[in-house]
Amino acid sequence: MSFRARLLLVMLVLTIGIQLVVSWAVLSALKTTAMEQGEKELGVASGVAQALLDGWGQQLLHSVDLLVEDPRFREAIDPLDSAVRVDVLGEYAERMGANMVSLLDDEGRVMVSSHHDAGATDAFPDLRDQARRTDGTITLFIHDGEAFQLVLHPVRGTTSVGWLVMGFRLDEDMATALSALIRSDTHFEVQVGEGEDVGLVGSEGLRRASTLFEDAKGRIQLVVERSYETLLADYQAIKRQLAIILAISLALMLVAASLIARGVSLPLLRLVGAAKSVGRGEPLDLDRLPRKGEFGLLSSTMLKMQNDLVRREADIRKRSRQDQLTGLGNRQCANEDIEAAIATGRPFTLLRLTINHMRRINDTFGHDFGDQVLSTLAGRLADLPAPKAGAYRLSGDEFLLLLSVSHLDPLWLEDTHRRLTRAIRLDGSPVTLDCAMGEARYPEHGGEANLLLRRAEIALDRARQLRQSYQCYLHGQDERHLRHLSLVRDLQHAASNGEFSLRYQPQVSALTGRALGMEALLRWDHPRLGRIPPDEFIALAERSGLIHQLTQWVIDTGCQQQAQA
Image 1 (cartoon, rainbow, N blue to C red):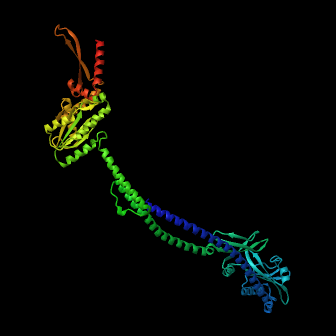
Image 2 (image 1 turned 90 degrees about the vertical axis):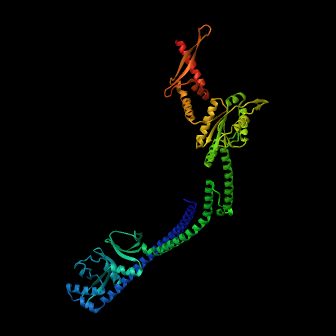
Image 3 (image 1 turned 90 degrees about the horizontal axis):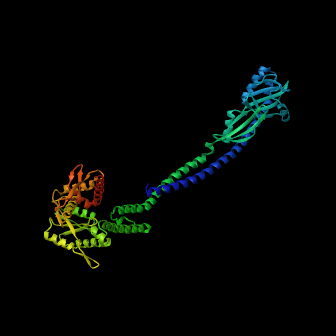
C-alpha cells in the first residue's frame, strides 16, 4: 500500500472513529432519555386511564340512577313475570349499552338475569351492603373470565323492592377509546392469582400493568403499552439525521484528506522517484524535486548522495578494472578493451609476456623484491611507445600488450625486449630479467577476445618450451595445447591407476665391457592415447610441479623391485 493511501486511510479511520464515538454518545443519551421519559409517561397514562374509568363509572351510575327513578321503568318491570322482565330489562340494557343486566330481590336472590340463574343467592356477594350505604355503587367484577364494570342500584317498584345490576364489559372497544384519549396502547387482562402493580419492559416496547380489581376469583389489570417505535420515534429521526451528517462529513473529509494527502505525498512520491533514479544511476530531474522546507532539505541531501554515488561508482569501476599492485589494467579491463577493439573492425595484435623464473626470484630475493620487479616491468610496459594501445597485468607474472598494428615489426620487437629485460638493481647489485612473449593477431588468429587471449597464451607457452624470447601463434597449436592440458590432468592420477612402468638399461664400461650399473627409465602407457614419449610428459611434469611426485614414485618402485629381485 502506498504512503498516500496509508495516510488517507489513517485520516479517514480517525474521522470515522471520532464521528462514531460522538454519535454513539449522543444516541445513547437520547435513547436513555427517551426510555426514562417513556416510563414516566406510561405512569401518567396509567393514572389517567384509571381516572377515566372512574369517571365513566360515575356517569354510568348516574345514568342508572336516572333510569330507576323513571316511573315508566318501574311500571314496566313491576307487574311482569320473569320472562317479560328479562325482555324488558334487555331492551333497557341495550339502550344504555350494558352487556349484563340482573334484577335482584331485597334478599339478593336473582329474580331475572341475562347471565345468572334465577334464584341464585351468590351472584353478587357483598354488593348490596355497599349499595345501601351509598344508595348505589359501582365496582369491577369477573364473570366467566371476562371483566365487567358493574352498577348496583336499589329499585323500588309499586309492589316490590329490589336491586338493579347492570354490567358493562371492559372489552377492546373500551380499551380503544382509552388508547385514543391517553395516546398509549391499552387493554384489559383478567388473571388468576395475586399480583402487584409493576412496570415491565416487553420485547417490543414498554408496558405497565396496574391492578384495578382483585378478589378470590382473580384480578383485573389495566395494561398500558408503548412500542419502541413510538418511544424512539424522535431517537430514530435524530439517528437518521446523524447518519446523514456522518455521510456528509465523511464525504467532505474524504475530499479534504485527499487534498492533504496529495499535498504531503506528492513531494514524497517525487523523492521516491528520485531515489529510484539514483538507484538506477539515472540523473535527477531537478525541476521535479521539492525545494522548500524539509522536503527541500531531503532533495539537497539526495542530490549530494547521487553525486557521491557517481564518484564512488567511478572509483569502484576504476578499481575493478585496475591491478592494485602495478596500476595497469586487469584481466577484466583487457577483455573489455579487446572487445571494443574487435567492434571497430580494425586489425590489432596481442603480445602476451611473462617473466621466466619468477618463482626463483621470489624464493631468492623475497616477495617484496618480487613485487618491485613486477611494478618495474609494469612501468616499462606503460612507457612503451606506439603502436602500444594498452598494457595489462593478467595474473601473477603474466602481462599483456594491446598493439594497434596487424603484425609486429622485428626491430620494434627486439627493441621492446631489450627495454623490458634491463637489469634491476637490488642493494647495488643488478638482477637480470628474462622474458618470454607470445603473439596473436586479429582477425588472423580469431575474432573473439577469449580465443585471442588463449592463442596468445599458447604462443607464450611454446616460447617457454623452446626457451626462446618470442613465438607467434601458428594454426594447429590449439590441439597440441589441449593435448598438454589433458596430459597434465591425467598425469596426476597415472601412478595410482598403474599406468607407469620402469624399464632398466645397463651401463657398460667401454674399456672392459663389464656392466657397471643400470639406469631406470620411466614409461607412461596412457589408456586412451597410448605410449606417451618421456620427453613430452617429463617436461609437462616439470612445468606443472608434478616432477617431485614422479621422482618419488620412481624411487619407491625401483627399490621395491630391487628387493624382490
